[in-house]
Image 1 (spheres, rainbow, N blue to C red):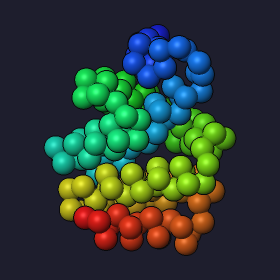
Image 2: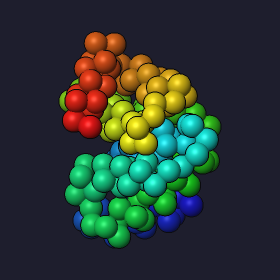
Image 3: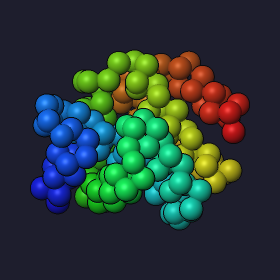
Image 4: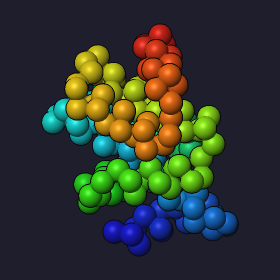
Length: 149
């Protein structure tokens, strides 16, 4: 599994293999988005499309690269025992602005099916706490997403 992820990033995201950390950050972000999608017990097409759109936009990937990252991150999220392995990486290497963008993406996925499940909201709140996002910024991110829906 880890070899497949490494090969994907070497081939598509960082051809010069400059920084392994960038690879892991992208995978961690994607895995968090997928974690939100899975919280209500059903995966809807709207959620999958919202995740793929966020990944494509955030990482400037082609459609096939986005699809491949989605599959890899989905596998990684299934094998994860907690969110900390993803959030600790993001926390160390993302600026506050980038962390807030991750929270916005999480809200976007949570609302993509026009229904906010309590489990989805709980995960967004946990991730925000783990990323040291203030409650005020957490709520502002939520409102920005709702305003742009």
